[in-house]
Image 1 (cartoon, helix red, strand yellow):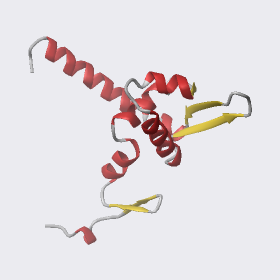
Image 2 (cartoon, rainbow, N blue to C red):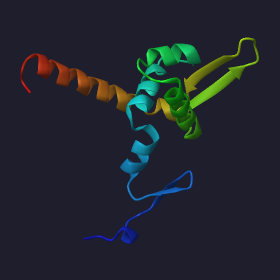
Image 3 (cartoon, rainbow, N blue to C red):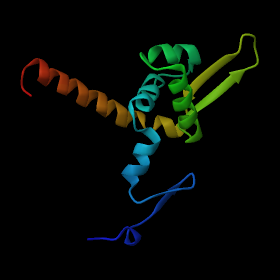
Image 4 (cartoon, rainbow, N blue to C red):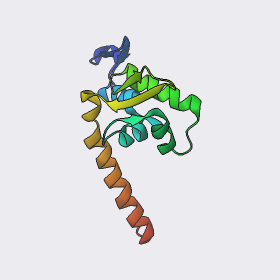
Amino acid sequence: MENKEDKSKYFFHGHEYYCTLELAMEVIGGKWKTMMIYHLKDGAMRSSELQRSLIGISNKMFTQVARELEHDGIIERKVYPVVPPKVEYKLTKTGETVVPLIMKMVDWGESMSEKAILGKM
C-alpha cells in the first residue's frame, strides 16, 4: 500500500492535492458550478439572467459559486459603472476548456434518461 508521502503532489491556490481528479472536482465539482459553466457556454450573461437560469439556487449560493469560479479563473466578472449596477459573467479561456467535458456529461445524462424511459436500467 502506497503512503501519501510517496505520491506526487499537486498545488493549486496554495492547496495540496495528491490526485488531479481531486483538484478538478474542487474547481468544477458540484451541481451549481457545472450548471453555471454550462449556462455561460454560449457567451456572457448578466448576473440576474444567469441566476434566473439556475433554477433553485439561492442568492447566497449564487454569490458563493460565482466567487469560487472567479477565484479559480473559470469565469470573469465585469461590473459596469452605471446606475443601477450592471454585472456580467463570462467564461475565461480556461473556463472554455471545461465546456467539452460538461457537454459529454450532458450527453451521458441524455442517454441515461433515454434508458430510464425505455426501462433498460
